[in-house]
Image (tube, rainbow, N blue to C red; front, side):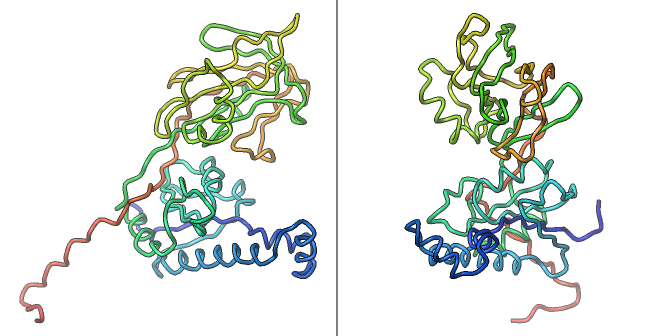
Length: 319
């Protein structure tokens, strides 16, 4: 067992105001830019204040003797998480999905800085509960919910993990050409790409696709160990088909795709196109349930009550 104090890694993203100031330079320039589009600087400033207040509450909740680190979303691919870290996410639900691909078994605790603006499915906790929850997470006193992830693996060993979905297609969203294989059936296709979703991702992109498919399999539940795949706008022609366009992947099942896209094929997860795998002509890709899961603390968790400190022999308690 490690003798080090727990380390809490706080993950945030730059606020809209910070991004606008980086682009326009001053607040008045930002105000002018937003006003011309029917938007108000005050709304952006309020969201920045809410995020700052949530970050202060979380920082104050970390015990003074514990180790701590801070990382922005844009730096996640360069940050090394330790196996015993407690990962605290302050922001939108999507930020948890961004974090999920870089952690492996660590507890993830999400705080929602604006409950009136964000759903809070993966960031279900209010910042004012941070003092109790952060300590309890570091002491292993919180129950975690496991969410299935999807893994995409190229034939050269490169891998990519995602919490919501993996997209396979053309990098400029032209027609994607490939051969797809599932359940013993294979088909050459030309389409707008393939989406493979988890139960967590079933409330997003996959849901909108599923609504248009009368015969598509049911979407997986958030805690279900299953994936669903969809081919977007498959085009039937003399060389390509459109029959193998949806299906389910249980543990042990695989979806295999061989690229026919020259140097323009890409694979990326959770909408992060900048962190992608190149899917060149002839490359083979296998997609399946990942061997790792996201372990996050769901709504309704509270620290287990601490046992009272036993009295020292020979000393009476006061009162």
